Amino acid sequence: MKQTLFLPVCRQDMLARNWKGIDILLVTGDAYVDHPAFGVAIIGRVLEAEGYRVAVLPQPDWRQKEVFLQFGRPALFVGITSGNLDSMLAHYTAAVTPRRSDAYSPGGLPERRPDRATVVYANRVRECFPGIPIVLGGIEASLRRLAHYDYWSNSVRRSILIDSRANWVAYGMAETAVKEIARLLAAGKSPESICSVPGTVWVTSDSSRLPAGSIFLPSEEEVRESKTAFLKAFRLWYNQLDPRFARPVVQPTGNRYLVQMPAPLPLSPSQLDAIYSLPFTRQAHPSYGKNIIPALATVETSITSHRGCSGGCAFCSLAMHQGRLVQSRCPDSILQEAGFISRQEWFRGTISDIGGPTANLYGAKCLQNKAVCQRESCLYPSICEFFSLDGSQHLFLLHQVSRLRQVKHVFVETGIRHDIVLRDTCQNYLEELCRWHVGGHLRVAPEHISKPVLDCMRKSLPETFEEFRERFKFVCRKAKKELYLAPYFMSGHPACKISHMIELAEYLHRFGFFIEQVQDFIPLPMTLSACIFWTGRDPLTGHEVYTCSGKEKNIQRALLQPSDWRNRKRLLPLLKKWKKTYLLRRPPSRKQQGNN
Image (cartoon, rainbow, N blue to C red; front, side, top):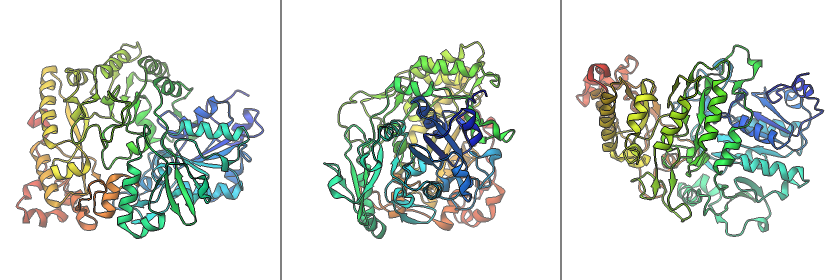
């Protein structure tokens, strides 16, 4: 029988490859999409390239034991992830109400994975295969690897490693960690002996096994009982994020110790290229038929040019997951990937995006890369003098891909950092981007316009966005293009008060912005903003910080869309008090006001 291009997802697929069993089973809370924007696809292809027999079990019915048993007992280990999102974030809004859809499920249907999916899957795997090694990965495991604040229970929860009874958390992007664990297990090493792999968390009851030079955090019990201890633990852990000088971190939990090994050094361009050159089909598994996976539709023709983000935004999990150091691919590799996409029968002529967490960070680097840098962010409170960025490298990629015969358009959909555009050594970056690579709206994320809120977010000054907005208007007029900014603004973040949100609402009304999608702050586990939200203090400065919740949080959210009729009843008394009832009227369209 002809071998399928996809990794096996059922026993029939396994038998079609003439396999009697598998080496590794990957369980995921997402549908199986063989695309490099989906974590389980990357890990699966990386392990396959190493010669292992890998199967994927996507969105299994966790209530049925037989589903997990269909491949038999894996020879090496089971890898488990909730998917591309934390399962609680996938299920619930900032108001803790159930979401009506799930972009990572067939047809966008919700409830295809359980709450706290990683733990549920792990407990079922333990029942099916007693004693089998388990590796947890993905965003849910990464951001819950130590004791952490959990917004959905409004409490401090212990490490996901303890709740799941797994052997390791492979945090971050994890390709190198997972490959090394597989290699050691295949060589006959016992799970207990595998305790020095960079980018992993493991647990032991033997204090003699703790790595030399470890940083000791307050215990799990202490951080659950005391916000002061929580602040101390966060500060100690947060200072060990840079892999160039990080030390192991140890957190006592009961009569055991959680051990976090330092993250591995970033992948080299050639290592990153090798991953993205693996034989991804870039399609959802054919078993889903016409039930599309909404998340695939947005990235099907996108290309990842780099990983990592130097921004250090307090609310963002990117630095915790992909790292602060930017890792960029080689132009030839990206061009080859674009060529592959352009030759597919489903390709319609448009490359939707060439970028990463922030598109214009491609090629960014530290000119003192080998030095020990203690900065929290390369971009805040100001852009570091040693931070090198040349937008011409990104433009070169975009222009080269545009020259491919089958390609009609190359866009940048993920958005750019507006503050670094102003410091870019390539003076015509924004003009070239707007002239050729913006489809109508350019996404930027100023997040707010009030300085106290921006300081807490670790974002650039409001004047920076104003300067960028004026430059954007100028280049649009020069290029004779009718383009618009699509800015992201956030409500409910620590330090944000009603007065700040009214200030933002006035700003949006004055410039004709109507926010279609509201970005209501959610404290993601182990982010700086979540720590501030829980404790009411900034762990790095010790300063008290105002936080809102409940009714006020809902009002702040409504102030992002004051002219929406659904918010009128809630906002009318407040806006009467502030004498701002004009905000209830929809602002003039941006077309009436000119490009903004």
